[in-house]
Amino acid sequence: MSTAIYPGTFDPITHGHIDVIRKSLKIFDKIIIAAAENINKDYLFSSDERVEIIKESLFKDLKFNKKKIKIISFNTLTIKLCNQYKAKVIIRGLRAASDFEYEFQLAGMNKKLKDDIETIFLMSDVENQIISSKFVKEIAKLDGNIDKFLTRSVVKKVKNKLE
Image (spheres, rainbow, N blue to C red):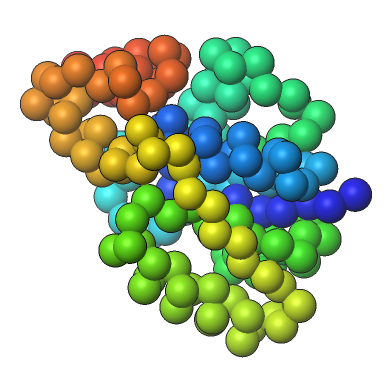
């Protein structure tokens, strides 16, 4: 059984993230969605909240198969997660060329840390490539409509958090 790790902040999970998850499920038997706990970032949601939001979005809103997806939080190197879950692949989403340089360096560092780990870059569908969690939060804070970017339950969570 092939397993891949999809790490990210998912603060909040967007349709762009979901596109990458859908595509990953066509390639791998199981996906570990890992919400990062990075102390250098200012999150809207705690890691526990993000895990619950991802679960609600994928399993309640979209009816994804729970047997093929595990959702966790983590505060360690991604390669340590790969070891823990016996995954040989890290999935990273790309939106635009501007993402590539950072992602390329990150993939190279992971490869240096553990040479049998591969990184696969997947792009979301064209209509979702412009979506970023950062912009969604800014739009929401300014009372803009975020319905096009998130599933129904995530929209509700973001609005409740900002009230």
